[in-house]
Image 1 (cartoon, helix red, strand yellow):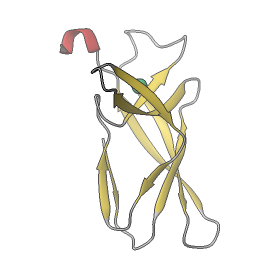
Image 2 (image 1 turned 180 degrees about the vertical axis):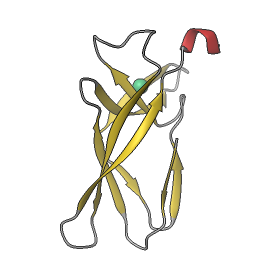
Image 3 (image 1 turned 45 degrees about the vertical axis):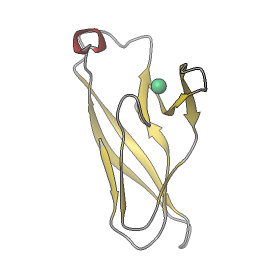
Image 4 (image 1 turned 135 degrees about the vertical axis):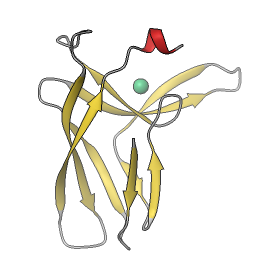
Length: 106
Ligand SMILES: [Cu+2]
């Protein structure tokens, strides 16, 4: 998923809300010994006129929940944005996440 900021103001992604599921933004971190781990990111900053891509192995969105099963093909979420250089402003943008089977992909 790519997020593009077409404005001349810095935008922040403050999180996601996905109904019954927990969604977190994670950063993939590789330490000196090559071990890969994930770190939670509370806020994602988008510089003016820039684009970031969220994907496995980099910054990504992780969805968790007891009700998550193989039958679920996708989830509707809201991305919560905030602009920091203007008046208090926050906006919810609907997004759809396709659920893919990680095991079949590797
Ligand atoms: Cu993760």
